[in-house]
Image (cartoon, rainbow, N blue to C red):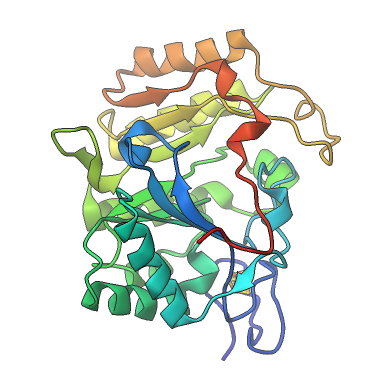
Length: 293
Ligand code: SF4
């Protein structure tokens, strides 16, 4: 069985070898726990039941979760263990099940979600992704995912290649997000402000790249409209392994403010903004070979 789950199209048998993402066929989970550092609509006051998968089909040179990139950290999780983990997180009071970098594990996650739902999983399921996805893979999750949190990282092809080694990132991500919006529409919240369904696009403003942020904001309005919920993230934190300027420094106050002002100018109606004090290494959870649950 050759893997073409994502646009990398590695065409390899993941039961025998690893592709670009570094993921074996059986997923590795690096952490499963209540997580409180997502947007308030996702973390709420009880936390988001987050399952961090090891391995990624993007290799961003500035990744805050760099230790997960090669897919070797964490424990192997069977379909049944995944399903039990979701139920355990629900029993701990999680507002939702938050699957981080789930795409390479499509063929285990879909039956695991069916199993968990048949055994009582009733809280919303969140698909948290860098958006280098085929629309076909997103379609395969229809009816199983309630909330999509897709990044829209780059408009500019040169940045996508330099920083994430991802050819045609923007075109691919936009088609994937269109499919997410077709399934669940823009994000809706309950009377307490907790997300129940829909899409919220995330964009991390990168130092020295506000020109690209502006292009992305223009594109979101053009393709999805100004009512598309947006998280404009300021939490960029340089990692010691990334030596490429301007990614070696933090975002300045002026850069972030200019991105926020551009949102206001474009008329976005639902924007989550962060303080610049969000740019802290503490935002990266502790990962280890032993998951928390
Ligand atoms: S999921 Fe992994 S192995 Fe499969 S095509 Fe994508 S990068 Fe390659």
